[in-house]
Length: 495
Image 1 (cartoon, rainbow, N blue to C red):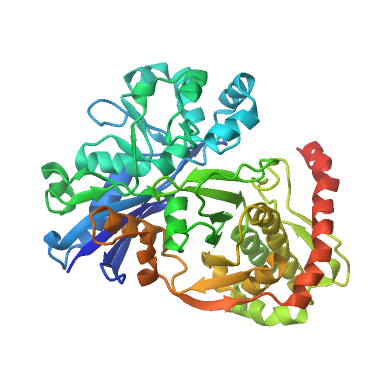
Image 2: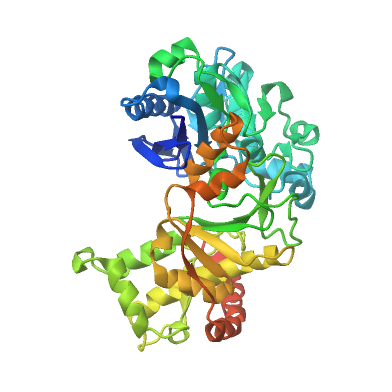
């Protein structure tokens, strides 16, 4: 039997999953590691922790199978990082990860060199210190000795591929998260590299996610238990892999991820450049496809905060209680609105000053009304994002994953607010590794193309819009927007 190993190198740990070629999950293991937070906005990780995680979980996964049956190893990984390695592949310092925002001065410098709209048209993104290119420029400015020794700058999965094969490569999706890639041409942008003042020689070769980076070396085989010569397929960034793992493998197919941060993304042949730059674009793991996306900072996180704040943990199965109690809170939450901006907002507001806010609170409101308002507020925020995509293509369904998708009542609220069918699949937490596994299978020829996702993922339940509720929510959406814009200047003053 052929097996595929998918490693999902996340922020809190690596999840390794063993899949059979017919789409079954055979086994999985998790290895946790730490994030080092300093100076308020600095976030780093030791790349050796990633390597230890991959070695240990791989050994555990293959303990009861013959390593020669592993057809391929592939990856999903955290994006927007910056790890500098020397010519021998050794890390020169900790990796600066996606959550790090230290490069504010670099952001201002780039703003002085190029109009944001021009930047957006090249990269698919707004100018932001979150992206890898700004972090690499910070290193050049603040740790010039590290920059001088840097042979290549890599993302998390790229470093593990280097350790396994000796190849210095990345894929389109991770390259697009640097904001140094021309998303229209799928290559490094000479214009942006010149503006940033970064050497093109320090960037890895960009390949397709389905390309074989190389094979497992003898040294890596000893460390992982894999067979020397096992193919290593590049894979992609976690967001792009999650999209493929929810079936977003054809133009117009969309997904909704209800994790701590939450987003909607679709598959498209070309970037969607929104006039208001509300949404952004990553390269997909599907070769030469893109993934227009709108990410809000706290979707599922807003609901978790509300539940943990309003309900005692000893009250029993809280989310089950909420499911039942929501029937006592009418649609519209008795006129209560919630702005889900608990840590500022990315799409659609792009406002770091924005705050979480209840508007319209009265003595009449109970805890469950506040919970409903949070669910509706997240849905209203998503609606602003989805409208951008619907203006360009037909979207009838959203495949929904993540912890928030376990709450059926929320899926119905989303269906009503978005006036779009929400599809709950059989797997809610495995989409990212599933996308990586399929990438590996396509890369070595086990699967013909990404449409094989139908073997892995199946719709379990559909939540269709209630016409009456959808019509009611249409009258509420302008008020939700009014609440934000009325408070926008007040939020800035609060800071």
